[in-house]
Image (cartoon, rainbow, N blue to C red; front, side, top):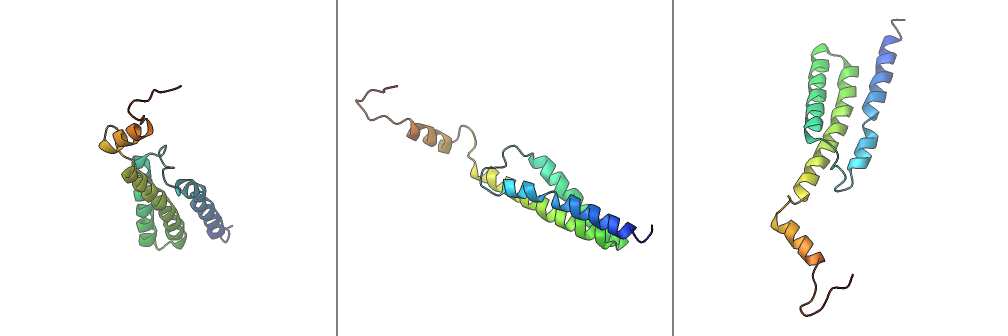
Length: 114
């Protein structure tokens, strides 16, 4: 059984690390992260980085590699979230007003028809 433990850890690490891939694929298009929590992504990515530090201190390559992959993927989603926050104008800003007013523009003297 002791010979199986590294393989068991490696399989667990592979599965949990790759579980972030679908989230990265969903977050990649612009504007697709509105339902994701910025705080959760920041805490998760920070926790994974701390696991990497722990793995380095213990010299455990499975912990380091697994959490390195997870931190990279989680960090990618975090960066996508930050990108989307920067690209989205805040409510009530001039940009939001301009978008609404441009869409509702009616030439002077004409009547709106439903």
